[in-house]
Amino acid sequence: MEIVQLNKILRGLCHLTNLPISFWDSEYRLNATFEPFNQSEAAEKSFCRCLHDCGKGYEHCIESDLYGFRQAAEARDIFCYRCPFGLLEIVAPVFRAEQIIGYIMVGQGVMSEQMQ
Image (cartoon, rainbow, N blue to C red; front, side):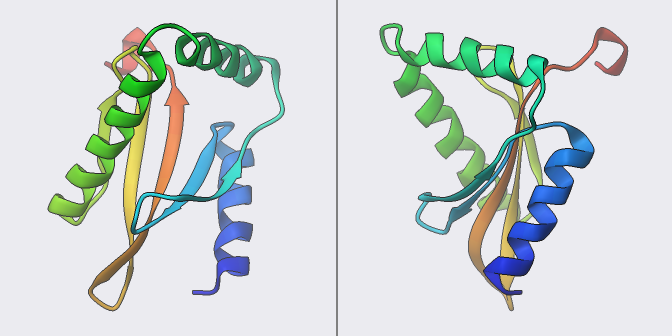
C-alpha cells in the first residue's frame, strides 16, 4: 500500500473516530499524524502538553509509546493499553508480506465507565 493511500485512509479514520491517529515507521519514528478538529481533542492535547512539560512526563509518554509498539510487534496484532496517565491508546502493526514496516497508533482516548 502506498503512503498516499495509507494517509488517505488514516485521515478518514481520524474524522470517523474523532481520535488522533499517527503512522510510525518500524524504527518508531513519526511519519504522519492526523488530528480531529474539536474542542475535546484540544483539551486532551492541552492535558498531554501539560504532562510533557512537567518533570518526567514526556519521558513517561515516550516509554509508554515504545511499550505499545513492542507489545504489538511481539503479538503481531493490535495492542490496546492505557498510558501512565490513564488515556487509552491502540497500536496496530502494519505489514508488508511478513515484515512489520510500521505502526498505526490511535489515541489518546478516554473510555467511559460503561465501556470498562
